[in-house]
Length: 221
Length: 270
Image (cartoon, rainbow over all chains, first blue to last red):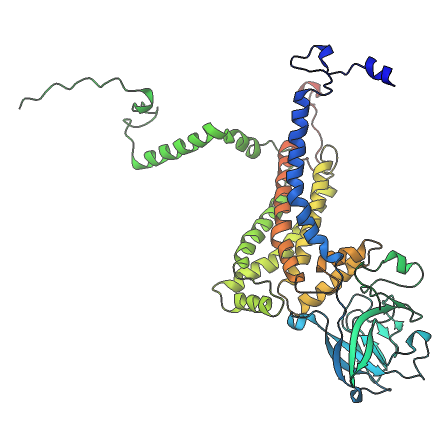
């Protein structure tokens, strides 16, 4: 190894007679100068591009804190019908941050799915699972109906017609000092199995949950 | 006092000497119009001597166009003027607009429409002009396609044109939210969620657009910044590249135009 190094003549050493070269030099000064100027330029450009990009992309990775919002006393809600309540999804932006949830008391006769055991209240999001329009509970039809593209859901929020790809999202509920409180949103697949919250239009059956990964910051409880 | 003989003029440097009268000038006398023209020529010459821009101007403006060039060839310029109209009206709308989701955005648009002098007119130009621009883009694209003007050596210009089309669509999408009425809000919710239905990248894309997991305080300002800072700059730069390539490569003859044989190869007319 040592022999090899001795024999090896660098292209740019004194041996080649380049003026001003010194022993062991492996790169011409012109080339070094060009390289350092480019590197300095790249560092300067990166110094403002990368923070700006991170600034714009950052919200994807940010986790939102869980909020619990009181929506009324326990007497407000019944086991047989939904009561609409206005909730705040995003605080401090007025009407644009509000949404509607439909709430009723847990009813063992209807809510037979194992996942609903131990949930004091069933709170269904009015955000259509197709593209996010607001659905409305129609008493006469006993269906949630979306005005935009004709999505129809049954009493439990399961799709019965139209383009939606999964049932309506739900909220965690709890009772705190006689008041019903609504917590974070979660999504369900067609068997009402719970998943961390997804956006509308993202199916959760079969391979869907892998094709549409949940955002890093949002987890179900 | 006796009149003194007039002294000969001192030898002046060339720059200060009176220029000789131009040929065709009556008596070599210059009226105010000539003076003004002279001044204009001097200014243009001054700039041109330092920039050589007149050559570029001639190169851009005085091009040879093929036989058969017709009204369809004006669709590209029409699109560009639609863009310029959007740019100018947009700049003035931005003087009044407030990207405030808790009511300020809607109120500022209402103010522009109902209170500002000519506000409804300028906003109308911007609103309807956006549709005009999209229609013109498609007509221009159709002309290019059906005339075969996308073929060698103009493929790169077609690619730039497609990017311009996508950017125009981005402008339409982000601009639609800004009035912040019910229609704008719900159309954007649906539009962002359509973005989200793309497998794997979709959820991240819609998070990027909203600036978070929900439609939030920064969504409107984010759309506003994209609409009036990010995309217009890209559009203007790419339109420049598009125009450069048009000037460099020239335009195509329409497909029905038969190539004429050179004179020496033509058979004698019967």
